[in-house]
Length: 234
Image 1 (cartoon, rainbow, N blue to C red):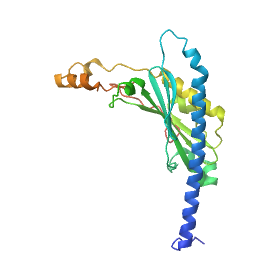
Image 2: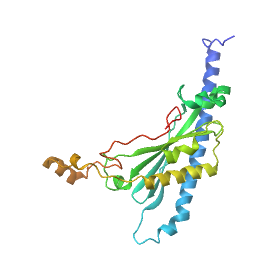
Image 3: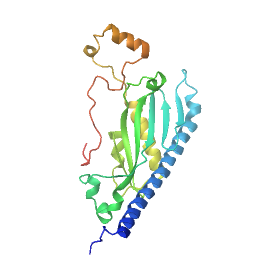
Image 4: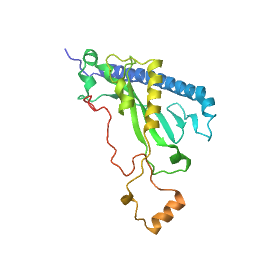
């Protein structure tokens, strides 16, 4: 017989179950994010000396931005890792919801979320608020540390077996390295000439005053989505 949720005691029990689940997922995700932070800082530290031997000074550093954000700065790029403080569930039509792993226990579909963004370092250096950044990956992790990574091909492709994939330090390092490699190969392209050939005096003065020329790696081009979609296809 179904529970009578109109009774205060049953409502409280339902609240406790759901809230406790979300707290468990949150703390597991926070633990994972801390591991991402530690591994990223270690990567920079271990390779700092080699980067310092180059002819020209190269940006290569780790910046801790608090409990839920950190940055990797290298060359002309910044990778921002950000943990969302809320817990999410996959949509009903997402492919992971159709797996036996979820059918056996629907609570496994509740996940924390860690996002990876790529920005140009000059966007922050010169305070260009109109510049574009790109979400290159987002990691979902549940209370059992099973994970699913959506992202660009190089970032997300190897990490989308949610029922069997369980996070460990080797996987975390691999996600960090894949994100860096993707960013290195994701080059800044010049916009089409015809998009820039006319400019008013006011626009030029504004650009000179505030460095407000909007810049992104694919500005002026249609940025084709190549992430793994909800049906698992590219």
